[in-house]
Length: 77
Image 1 (cartoon, rainbow, N blue to C red):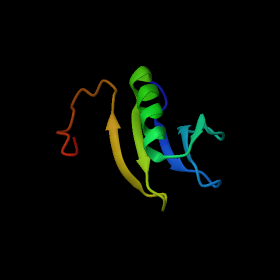
Image 2: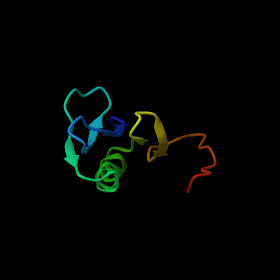
Image 3: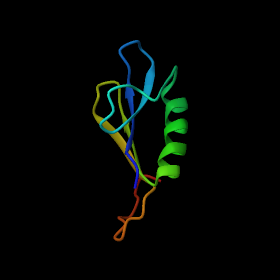
Image 4: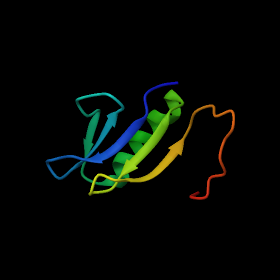
């Protein structure tokens, strides 16, 4: 299982995709939607989790693309 991918606001006003534990963003995007789409591809490839944060930094949503032996019912999608 790979690193969880986080979509967070960047100080420049853009949105960043950053792997858990990394100091530098993987890539910057002008919109949160573009960043989520890019991060979703990485999360699927690495069988990891996609964590989306709001402008205030709080977690808005999580999507798991890994092998969960006891998956919860996804009430969001």
